[in-house]
Image (cartoon, rainbow, N blue to C red; front, top):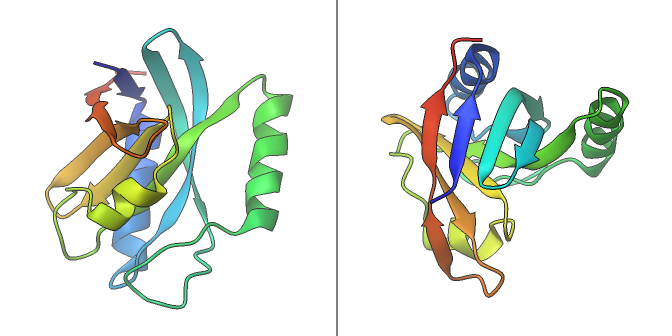
Length: 136
């Protein structure tokens, strides 16, 4: 099972984004570093949601490129995407599984907390993530 460690800042970023976007979905990128099966998320950066449907998300490519450049300058990477379920649990839907990033942590922030999974290359569920919270 893959592990994802969220810093207090990343955790707060995710919860704040969900709250501020209500009743719409928020989305963004997880910035951090990966070593083996361990991924540390230092920031959860919110991007504009370009989806026309209020219950869907689509990451803004221009903002994505800006975040990626800023991460590189700090010797960090984009480790995966995140989005919210404004009025539902953090359980991934079939659509979430179909559009998950293969081999990367995919996080959802729902009304019951944060949940994640790692998408297999074949778009089948590879496994749920174990999410832990760091003190710093």
